[in-house]
Length: 191
Image (cartoon, rainbow, N blue to C red; front, side, top):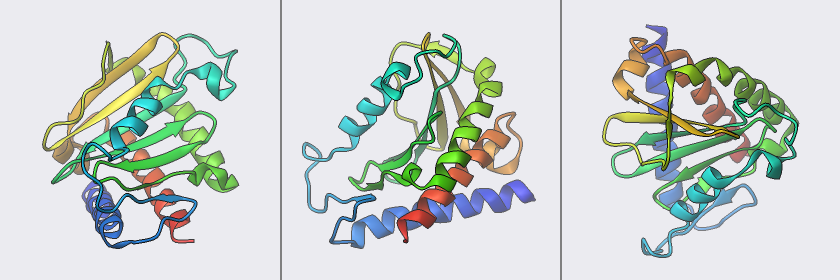
C-alpha cells in the first residue's frame, strides 16, 4: 500500500511539473522554460546527452574506484515524452522534461545536496542489477530506465513502472528514493 501511495504521489508530482512547464512564461534561475520551441530547438536531448557524458573527474571525483557509482540518471516514460532525473555523488541534481522544461540546480541548496549525495552513494547497492551498455536509450511506454554512471561506463536496467509503484520490483526501493529526490527538486523550485 505504501508503494502505491508513493507511486501515485510521484505521478502527480511529475504531472505537476509537466503542466507547470506548459503554463509558465518566465524562467527563473532554477527553472528552464522553452515555450513555443520546436523539437529542433528543445534543449532536452542536449542536456540529457551532457548529463550522460559527465565524467567523475569533471565533478572533482578523481579518486573514486572505477566501479563506484558517481551518478544516476533515472528516465521515466511519460504520456507524452519522458522525464530525466539527474543525480550525482556531489549532490548536484536536476529534472529535465522532454517537453522542453525542467528544474536545474536544486543541489545548490545545502539540505538537498547532502540528501542527494547520500542517496547516490547508496545507489551502489543496485549496480549489480544493471548491465553495461554502450548507448543509453529513452524509456518506452510504461517503463523506467535506471542508468548508473561509473568510470567503467554506463550500466542500465529497465523496469516496469507499475511493478515499481506496487512494490513488486526488486528496485522499488530505488524508485522510492528517486521520487524523494523529485520531491525535493519540486519543493525548491517553488521557492
